Picture 1 (cartoon, rainbow, N blue to C red):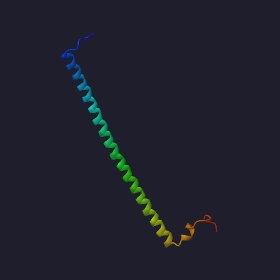
Picture 2 (picture 1 turned 180 degrees about the horizontal axis):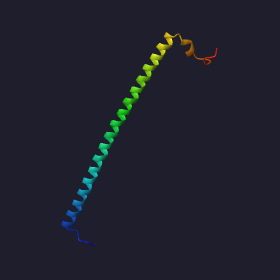
Picture 3 (picture 1 turned 180 degrees about the vertical axis):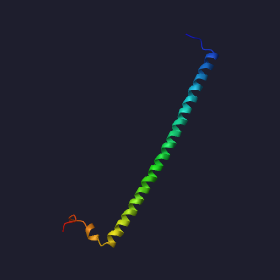
Picture 4 (picture 1 turned 30 degrees about the horizontal axis):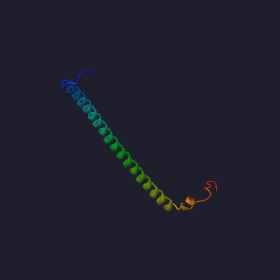
Length: 85
């Protein structure tokens, strides 16, 4: 069996230090990717919120148009409107 010397311990510690350094670099890369994904998710959430806002505005506008044209009876629940009548 090899004799344990200070030089051997020193070389092992240097190799461990190098491995730990590469692990820390990998962790930093993963953190930056997570931050980028978080930013993308926030952007998507804001886009969805904007779409809901536009849909709400269009719904209100459609309601105004229906009221102005007296088409409210067409929107009542029940049988579908017969255009041929």
